[in-house]
Image 1: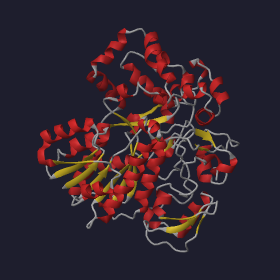
Image 2: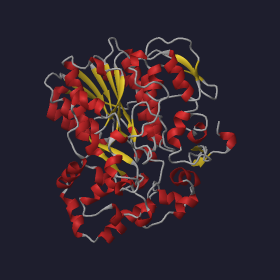
Image 3: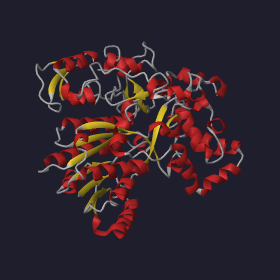
Image 4: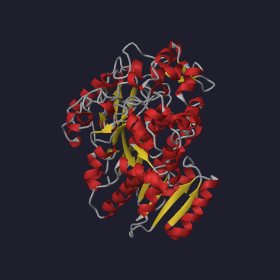
Length: 512
């Protein structure tokens, strides 16, 4: 096998490269590294370790000529490159270059190949947007409601949509959930990003090691001719029940390795109450049945991180009040911290994150005033995490049918549930575009697969920027069924940026 990969300097990509090269049938892996200095050392190390089995190109994934060279003559292309938060928050242009234009360039390069290689597109759980205790379980086909000002998810949404619209011959989309990796603790104590995590956000964690192993297993089983029915679909990468937590649990697990907990190190009013992303995957076992890749448990992996970084154990000897003050309280002043938005009167970000500036200022700093899913305040926690009890979102059509059995009636029902209609009178194949119309009258081309299986809808009004889901929910039941879990029905604010790039609630005349 001849493989091309992007994103191999990242956490999932590093593991995917290492584990893929364990396969004897892999002739070489051609990778693309940006021209950063840190990648100079990586390139030297890889050549020393693997020799000719690693071919290295240098440049941007948005460079179309580089992408053509990357995919030329290979059997499989795995696109994992991403600019993720907090960097995407601080540098939206870098996010747009990699997550949107880079994805487009790779897809176009694959499509131009003859024969076309198989294409694996790694997307993200962030497309689903905010969830809480009302609908903690989600699945492929659910609404894609990217949280306001989450430029990473916004650009990844465009990248995934472009992949689905490309009509590639052999592709798969993998939506990666939250990921644990060895350097996670260190990399998350220098930015206000951790405070974006809502305490009751359902989070399903996988590890970078398991996600890399998944890529290895896909290549291994495909080479053996065992998974032809796997292709042409979208899947959620998760970890199963051993990875299912909430924001509150996650802080407790991470802080345990330095001798603390969420309640010892934080005040609850420091954290967002909505506008995050994460869910528990109802359909996470679909990939597991194919590849048996879920090996790591979250609790065990955190302990492993603690053993790998002995310095964290020193935290157990430091008074918790000092860690609270010098390590975490200082981050409240970071520009990416919700408390900074509140202090500075950033109405748009405060409204998106808390409901309003006033609501943020009224939050109690006392833990006893907070209802927590992890403590059973919304019912038995184990029962909530049991997918047999899951309350699933409707997709608007007969979901018990196999995709191959969809009819025009299914398409019309799905369009109606989205407030729109099907313009075309007939459908071709699952992946052949037809014409749809949204409730605002925009006509657009998309395949039945993109809409019904992917959860995508109108590319004009339903893809940010701006973020207008509050308005859209009034006319789109598909959105309303989850949007109103965390928003009042009167809350129809539209979020965007002014000409200087500052976040704002858009005035009515600028909302369209």
